[in-house]
View (cartoon, rainbow, N blue to C red):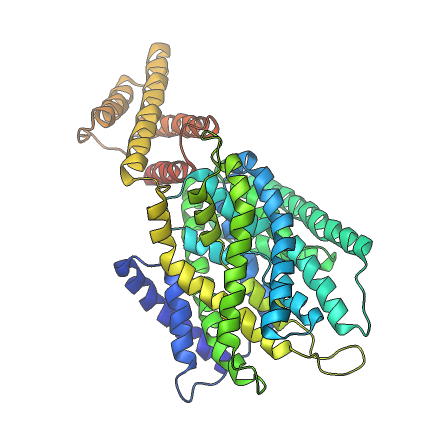
Length: 515
């Protein structure tokens, strides 16, 4: 009951924080972490102990699925090489660097130092998506950061399992062939399960037209993908990501406008509630974990700073050579791209959940040395990246010159709208030549489209409830939808413009009523 009360308080605080963050133009996740820290330090507030299974099973699947749905598959195809290198090479390099520094600076046993390295080796997709949602980054840069955070889970999870196995076992050793096989099982198996779930959901949704059933299916899909993959001893996170990417690109073909609008509204509410809880938990956890530290570990703030600095340095060194693939037109290395990609790669709730799942005892029944310090350092690094990098990310992007200017986005949208209206006019002219629609309906639709092209207010005459008019408007919107997605596939518009114009068309079609 106490946990339920804390969650409700977090939701109420999150609503206030989100409003405050919009006025200050700062990311809400960073403020939520600070609010969580402040609440946890209030005298009398009970310590919050969150089971890692609760985070992994209840919170992560829908947030990961929502992030994966937003991923541009078109842009992902252009940066798959850098994403692959970062998802494997950077994870290994970060784990090794953090492990060595943790031994030297924090005095952790080598086994636990590399457990800490595995925990902090990968960026967090929930945090990356939440922080990057408000930035106007170029498509390739945004997809590189987001895709890396979504696909590096299998690598870091294998590292974590291997490191924990060594820390728990008495005289444990690393079996590299077995670790490689486990990596293939987690990543490949999770991908297969996710693709199978996406295929099954696609078949079901193609035959469903009920808004309630569609909403239930959309909410259940990420949990089904996660649970099935974990039951098959593969990566549940990878399964959810693959399912989200595949279904996110086919959503406009699976449902009509009315259902898409409803799903978008429900998804926005669910994501807001879960993000509110998850970022608040990050802030609430740190003071409670610090109280459990043994004597002689008072240098943990400086140790956390050192680890965060190491992660940033390693990330810069790895991302700089890859900037050629992100900005190929320039043909040279770009410190600006490397800086933005590095600063946008934050840690979040997934490392925290992994750290909390570290066993308490070794195989011979003794307490694992250094576990409390690992928990504190993990949470401290997560808080540092969410607060420091989160609050300064917009400034870094602005100083880099990579941010898309509002005028650029507005001009792209205007050009795309004009292309859609011209395609619609061509279709109306074709129907007029065939004489298959009443002239009154043809003239009314033609005048409306011409007014949009001339950017003059529409002055409709008659009633829009006329059956022929509504039928023709639906045909025109279908043509515009097809043209919109051709513009996207031809790289003439960005993913952001696609989503905005798709929503406008959906609103217009929903306003015509049901067929």
